[in-house]
Amino acid sequence: MPYCIRCGAKIPEDEKARFCPNCGAPLPQKIRQSMAEKRKKELTRVAPLERRLILASFMALLCIFATCLGTLAKIEDKEAQDIISDFNEIENILQKAGIQFIFGNNMMYCLVMFIPFVGPVGGFYVLYSTGRVLAALSQVQGYNPLFLFLMVMVCPHAWLEYISYSLAISESVWLSFFIIKYRYGGLRFEVANAVKYISLCAVLLLAGAIIEMAIITSASEIAPIKSLQFSVMPENLWVQSICQMKNQNLESSLFFWRLLQFQS
Image 1: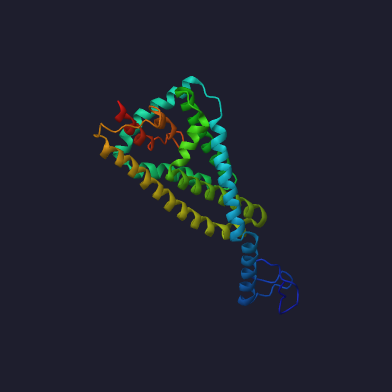
Image 2: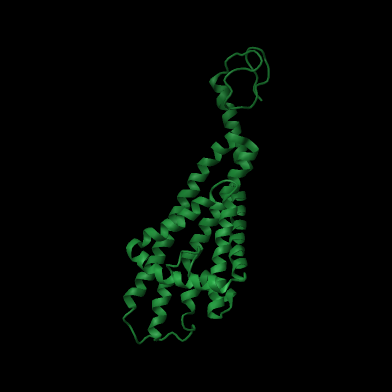
């Protein structure tokens, strides 16, 4: 702890302090910089990279668990039918918006998950709702809901989205922690990290949107081929198994819809 050069009193470790609280003497710039550097080192020591990776990994497991929990939920028949009907409306939206729609939809949910305190609640609710969609589809088609969940996890863009959401939720936890423990000073320190995570999530979600749209485009190109047979999967199973990562996000299932129509 630094001392005042005039009266010798201890100076509080506050980087905003400009004057000695005892005698009112102005504090030298060097002392203020020293206090600011000490606070930054303290905050960095509280949340090193190792702890951030551990928390993000734990949140990824919780995200998967939330989706799996929703997959096992009981769904009303009317709600299940409404979800199926939404599938028929998504193709027109994709033809007009394409990657912009996919990326914008995913990024909107991801930004909500960054909000301190409420981000984890909103994020897990969205992922739980995703599982409920799979539960509804399994109820309508008569398939095992956990099998549909595993089919979702086969998609590479699904993993990119889960990584982005786990990073967003973990950063929301860190923001909440620093606000509670260090008030404004901690928030100002952690906001810089939040901006980095938002940029990383944007890149991951954009890559996921490109992959998703590439799958859909590939399906459109091979659609005229009538001789292909896909006897491994039951009719229309993947149509409903890879639909919605977030209730309205049905775009990736269009590929499987067109693919399975070759059988007819």
